[in-house]
Length: 86
Image 1 (cartoon, helix red, strand yellow):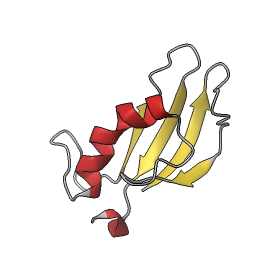
Image 2: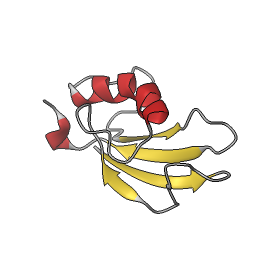
Image 3: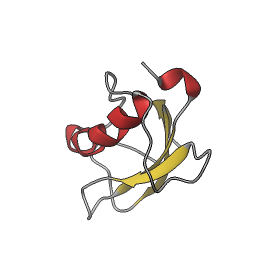
Image 4: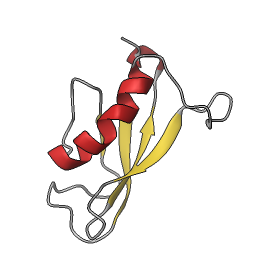
């Protein structure tokens, strides 16, 4: 998967800035802080192992997710790529 920072509200203590991109998987949290990765892990685990969500549109390959820190919130767009399945 590939993550892209699309918004930062306040100051992220992990240093994320709009436009940052990085790889992401169940085994590699990238530069995410532990709180964000812990919150996101169940979602990427489903997707990395070939699952999907019933509310996704046909062919959808990305979703937006937000950091649990509501004061200094980071928003990511996470793109699922074909090679992501384990």
